[in-house]
Length: 147
Image (cartoon, rainbow, N blue to C red; front, side, top):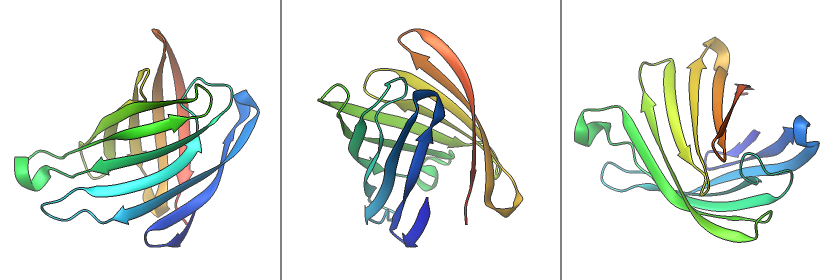
């Protein structure tokens, strides 16, 4: 992904096992404030486990640490996936355990997935993905770098 503006990023998502390459983008339409959630619209490959398809989504998210004293940030919204040709409710919860380590639990409208991420120096991020595909769990790794 490339950050074209403070509120817009876009790029290419490659899923080698599915032999699928698709556009990915996020637009921060409304900035989160101390009292209101942020609103994000975006697109990516369809949900984990689909062999093809594009998803278009909108989410509301809010860091609740100042309200609760806990390092939690929930989100919820809706996603339209072209693989199933349906609109589903989505949501999740990010927990920042330390400055470097965070977990996210993600509901994609069909299954609950989990990630554990570790931030390294220089904008590098390593992750472990635990994907639930209709009661079958698969492990994966992720790597990203911010530039």
